[in-house]
Length: 133
Image (cartoon, rainbow, N blue to C red; front, side, top):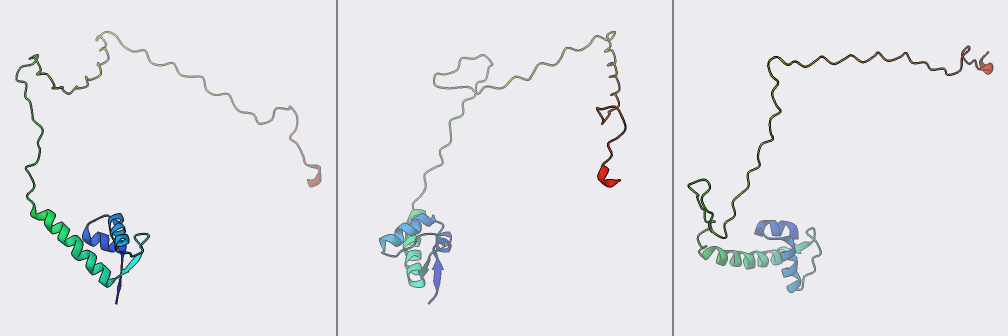
């Protein structure tokens, strides 16, 4: 006899692992996680139970889908019926003022070149290590 993992069984039945574990506890079978295994006989029993429940649910006719009521206002500025909120549309950012044709932008002044870097702060010859003489 084979064994089936609880997670695989839940995937087959298209239900949550917690639902399978809850049903197994009702049957007196200990399963702690989706990696727990159950005997093939128990898996067959669960498949038949959940397949019957799924078949009963599929047999019922679903009602028509609920579609929100769409309200069209034909004239701008027309009064809005009570209880209806209109969506707000963000306004675009204002464009910067255009320059007149005779105005020009002066070129930016060049920055002064950086001064040369010096690594020694003490004037004099470079340091000599006496041990390397």
